[in-house]
Image (cartoon, rainbow, N blue to C red; front, top):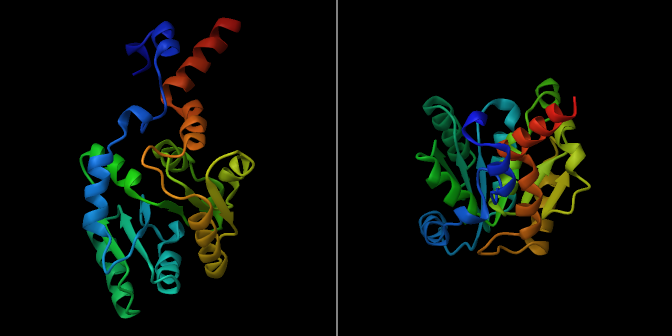
Length: 220
């Protein structure tokens, strides 16, 4: 991939991550909101990614029960994982959470992330948290949507960044719900996304990383 663009091309392109301002899809995002928001709910929280235990999906289910005025939508996971979590939510009589499976093609996922009022990153603590790649966090940032994230080691460096985000300790149901409400009140949804998130995400594009490697090679 890196060989397909010269350093000049990379420098002069307006990159803003895999999901960028030029990828804004307001009409598609509006359709997602029409589809997902139910029972007069107006606030949409979305998780996108794998559904392994350490990702914190069970915590999200319990957060949904605490915040019935918020609609939760979960993407990703195998069919078995999706069915398992659907059953857990059903057993707990939680009606404001949906499990969508994987969203394809990628353009549909981009518009889904933009449809959200908040994107949630409820990763649990433990060994897996120490080695989690922050790519999902970068993807969230690049959508321009506010974020609620747990303070796991790979994400701590971004806690001080001036972005539309709220932070809380992992594995804490009450704290996560409170943080979500904080973000809800502090960072209302913007059709064109929060510029601070979009701007911050630019430095983590694959193209930007390639450019840094190229520049480094020029210095040695």
